[in-house]
Length: 112
Length: 110
Image 1: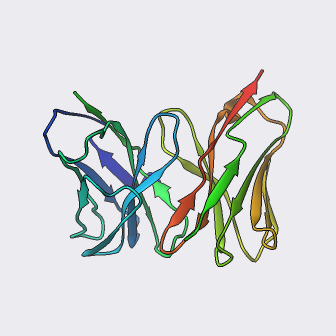
Image 2: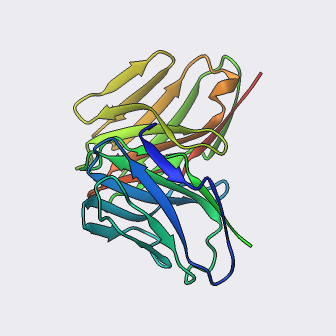
């Protein structure tokens, strides 16, 4: 999992602002995922991508957007439509086909 | 789609005791079952996994068992230590993604 990086580690958002979270992997994995984790809660899937230029909504996609222009990168934008975005965001990747997922270190987003 | 249930939500044990966490899944086509450990403020990390063609797998103090007929799998930790205190997540394969359980908070008291 050391091959997955997320930035920034901490992010502060003002009301009405869009912010983008970065996720990069050098594991040559085909699939990438974004999860949201609220305090004391489990992992909720936001978006996932099995291949470049293609992605699917997860369970809580509203208020979020993604792109997958490169195999190694899967940025997540938290839009102003997401009314309660304060959470810990985790990116993960695997070889595809729902195999072993490796997680990045996470980004903690706080709304001011 | 796949649904994974995990029990208990919290588990407190004394150091040296064993701990068992159980998960059930709904999709009989699921063929891969990983377990992750998440320490406070950190990323989940894979600790052990099992595939559907195997009934049990061990790695030192941890083991996982799988019962395909009953569609459940369990994590066993023996000789628990304070550093085992964390949240543990089970998962099962769904369509193009893993489906995670809701997590078990394990507290090991010295």
